[in-house]
Image (cartoon, rainbow, N blue to C red; front, side, top):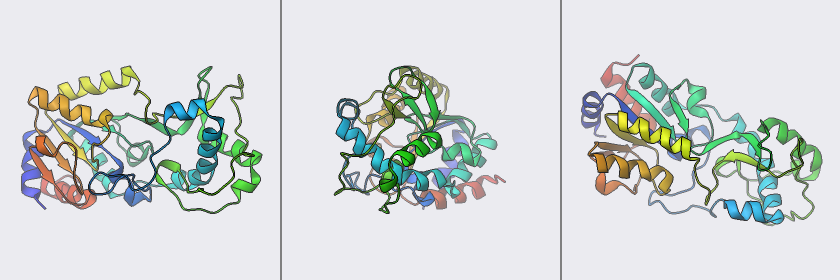
Length: 274
């Protein structure tokens, strides 16, 4: 564990733009998508065009989500989230951008957070933009599908669950309570574009920062990797804490290939952060 080099990096570049990924939340019981080489561990998540164009795909998505949501909603911040909140309070984090949709950074106390891919705890209507808490929608899903709600299954990433052999044809997906339109979690699906104002805000914060620190992300998704490309173009230093390969390995100033929590707790001690 190269704590000396990481400590020097943070002390030399105290206004950090921190980009976090799924590796930050695995200790909270939320599985990640990729292995140490950045390859998929399981079937790819649903794509946006599939979701909006196929009732069968929506039935499958919401049936699995019905079972996966309780565990996801009950997840609590772990030592990594808490350490990042402490670093922010000590003035070392200028902006935190997360690719995760679990809200655990905020629950741990971080305030300077941009949820790049949205939040799974909200549902939105694609027609009238009505929004409601996912807990409200969860009750409607369970009420309309009591047989599915009683099933027990393995949990997947981001509130998903394994139901590979189930018949989804009778699954009832409630429409928008305001207009009857199509409801979707307020997250960016694969194949969907991150809202432009959100990207612009994050890019501006990166331009104002001293350096980029990636934590728990393989950077295989371009929406996150773009910040490494921008930092490299500006000559901003980049470091990463990640178990396994990242897409930016050839561009990094420093890489610490160890568990996020152990590294960050060691960093806090070195920096004398309470």
